[in-house]
Length: 252
Image (cartoon, rainbow, N blue to C red):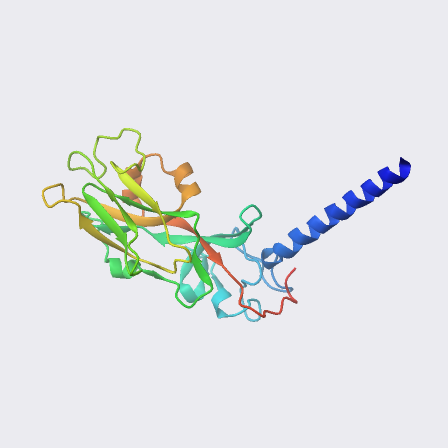
């Protein structure tokens, strides 16, 4: 009996060690900065393969520009994207960063921005929008589509009563199609722009908007969709992958 217990304990110990080694291996990519390199920008930790300064990042895609006296302080330089944080999700099993993604407006009095200047283009980079984001569109009589991903058509439609942005028919302000709508995004999406149409020519032709957003952030931070009228951008999750054949010597 003592031998059996001892063997069981040994097996359990080995199992725990193996699990710990697996977790350590899967999370090596973002555990810390390269030796002698700045490891944060403001309150944002910057782990390797990202880095600040010469010889501190894997390649130019992972170079971080840091200016703590400016707003925003942390920029992923080559794609010109503000980064809120770098993370690793053990449950999801993938490295990601949370970056700024534009809210694209159409026909919004006093808030109009040229959609061509709001395009996100990550083509050729190791970055892509995570599947944990949602495409959200809002506005009366709105049919919004993610532009430039032919032959696929991805988008949704919203309708509402009255001529206000989100109407008055849905007091709970949920994205069920009457005040705003939502849909999943394509896998490995690397470009984002939006195009807008009206569902009917006779309906309201007011303000319309669309964006890709971290679904969890949206659920906890937006209680009324009208709040989005005052926002230029929202956080989105950006997945990334290391090129094949990378020397991981400097990974912690």
